[in-house]
Length: 463
Image (cartoon, rainbow, N blue to C red; front, side, top):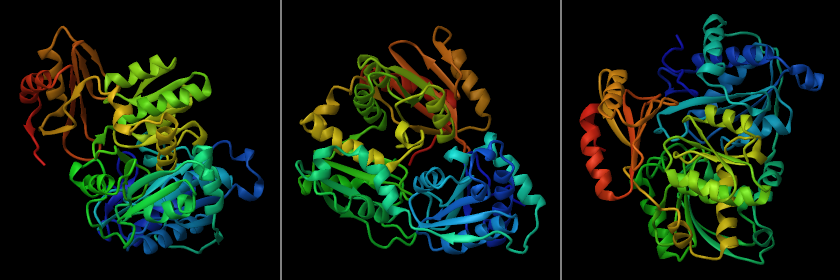
């Protein structure tokens, strides 16, 4: 019954079919049963051992979905702390701030308007993925009732001031006081950044915001709310240059991811942002480790080492990144997709903190962002290229066999490293595709190696 809506990292599908209110009720019931059975709940105050924080995004279907979800939770005996209309990182914050047993954000992130879903976390805001609870929640939801008496309570709470106080230490003091000024173009993608940015940064004296697509937060989008697609950055790139901004930021639909644009309108890869900000966090901490996903440029690891830190390569996906952050006591982490992770945020990602850190780092350096990042552009990259192929595993083995002298890593898919060039190929968790990222010393070398690698992987998907 629920198989169509459960994915590798969360619940996501078109709404109301197959993700209906009755399905949402069952998911709420299963989630509550799973969270109520966690080990370690005895560390929480007795009155909170059944409380789940729940929020939702701006989509037209979200009010009905979140109500059905909460009713399922309450039917299972859980109490609901409704934090209202919030960005996705707000919910793990609420879980920790209010000492809840877990949390759920109702959102479909960057998907089109006819989608919705749920991102689930357990105690201390730890993410729930396929290997860490989603399978159990699905089974509990399928076995549970389709309706029931609402045993648990529901309490609405406004935690925005507390959230603001949690994020603001990431801002430089001179920004908070207005002693220094920065001009920023922000594209909210008609998503939750349109709510979050005014509430958290709207009256910060040192930040002047040029707002783009802050209005119409109803799940209808001027452009797809996915900043990874270059075409979706055109508005923020143009505004950054036209308005004389120091930097441009484009958030995704639920404001947990963002992309950075320099003052010339150039797109700054998130791996380069991770290396740059990672150096800043390492200096502040006096050392430590920085976690990054294995698709990132080799320049990132080089920058971390140059700052006296330890680069830690991890698997793609927030579940794995947060786990790596905890295991290595990392000060910072980042993914190519625009997720940035902070030790000060319970090792979780935060679009708001990433925005604050970028603004503060630019002012701290004193140079234009394009000049700052120039030193990180040490290699040439293909960008992510998708391939359709019937047998993904066989295609990856063809790649390994074609380069017998290369070093091979199987952390996530297959990474083939030939020294002067490398590539990673991994299967998509959400689509029937292989995803290729390739890096070499020159653009010509990238083109040459792509010509050798691409025929091994299937049919290239052109966007």
